[in-house]
Length: 137
Ligand SMILES: [Cu+2]
Image 1: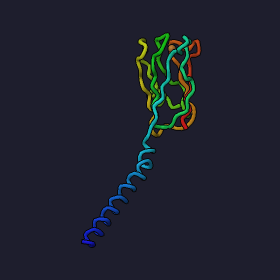
Image 2 (image 1 turned 60 degrees about the horizontal axis):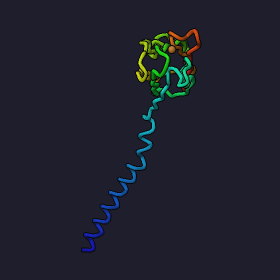
Image 3 (image 1 turned 180 degrees about the vertical axis):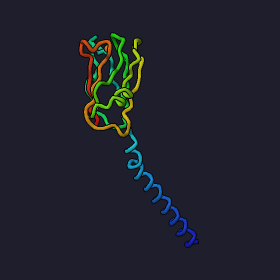
Image 4 (image 1 turned 120 degrees about the horizontal axis):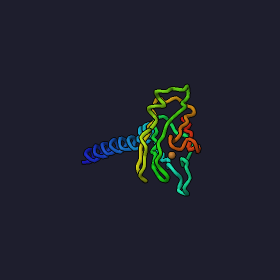
């Protein structure tokens, strides 16, 4: 009987160790994959032709959600990337014009996106400086 109890206790101990190990290692496993999503409003709440925020710092793999807010139509055209990579600029751009409040498009920075500054503008409102900058860390 005593031996039986000891064996059960030992098994419980092993089980607890495994559970603790899994729980403790979970944040380590989860954090590298955790990409952020940021929201940028197109047209400010107070009726200005601006991106809000107009500057943002992100990491490769992060996503920008461009939300049509006010005074459309708006779109997003990237004109400069680190190293002036025209193909990358094109792939980040969302040239479709958004007219309806609440409409959204997304740009995801590739996991191998070079660090540095990326600039963009809204085509219909480039003349009134509806522009912005994203820094990839
Ligand atoms: Cu615009």
